[in-house]
Length: 243
Ligand code: PEP
Image (cartoon, rainbow, N blue to C red):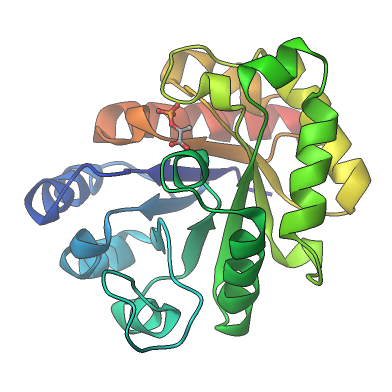
């Protein structure tokens, strides 16, 4: 099994910087990891060929669940397929909290992504108050139940992203991540679960060394090829050690 290392660029790296990233990452050997980048929509067509040449898959950070029509500002799954996308991020905490996406909508999106034949990465995780009140499992279970209603969970990659760790520099300890990952796998069965929340080259190995951590979803540290590659290397090493 190879580590699954994904980069979520959020609203960074437009076509010019995006292309420069792929030109730069060309020189690093990536074969021993499964690498996916989620660029902004506009960047995808500009980097598709470079990504393909390097064996990197592309994902979209969002998609609308309806097929076509009067939905100003939205992007359909068919459009994403045309652009050469394989993965779609669904339910990122920034989509939930800034743009008000509900679990109902997330469920519709997941179903649409699967119907379109693409692979969804579903983000779940608790906020700081929920963790401090000891309600982490309850929150994650609630999201999994609501978001995956009517869906075969093994078709979905789960990203456990504690909200208090996203973009804050505060990472869950490897033990905290392991505990929730083990719970998700016990609850859903044989799903892939990756960790996200301030992953950096310095903590990537200890996180991916955990038995139930199948990879990472990286925000800030995925913007620069060198730091992203160091995270990939840490994952490769951790997976070799895990056997
Ligand atoms: C993310 O955007 O999913 C994320 C985990 O961001 P960061 O690594 O910057 O915390």
